[in-house]
Image (cartoon, protein in one colour):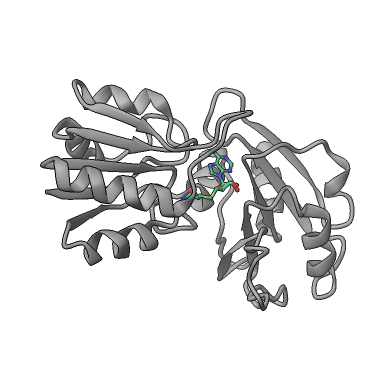
Length: 234
Ligand SMILES: C[S@@+](CC[C@H](N)C(=O)[O-])C[C@H]1O[C@@H](n2cnc3c(N)ncnc32)[C@H](O)[C@@H]1O
């Protein structure tokens, strides 16, 4: 009775680790969500699959329901794989799942994944650090839990590169906040559906990036590393 919390990588099914493939091969059950590419499931031949992501027009599972499914399946089977997009501990709520399982005495193993925060820009040829340009980066959510009593995200980051996940719904508000601290002409790159065949890349600046019809899932990268990316492509 062990549950593997496994990162599925950012989208391209080849961007999964060997360790993740080995965990899938021995899985009795795979519990997966929307951002885990379904092609990866082929590695878990013979396993039972439980989808817990969002589906248009259907109720989707709350985190509490997902925790309960993991606990129930963990008690019933030898090997359960919880497959999550990117890395399970980067805005993946993997920590909550880990704690829920441990509380019930179920063993947990961890398999890191290529997080979209870095894997998506790297796959596109956008370095998140660059000598003389950026010595630090911050990864931040663009959509803080609205039920929180106090906002934790302050946009006055010192990092040279800001990488925003879940940042499309609130892009206008987020960009306005960043412009309080950074030049409105600071370059921005948005990568939609990174690493997938229908990937779309949009570049602009803080003051004009919202004028594009951007659709999630997408990543927003703010900083002069975007100039390095543009130079490489010119
Ligand atoms: C709930 S977070 C999960 C992040 C995940 N755990 C990771 O490490 O990549 C989902 C956000 O990740 C980003 N994301 C995930 N996959 C992406 C992709 N293929 N292209 C662009 N952004 C992606 C988007 O910002 C999306 O809103």
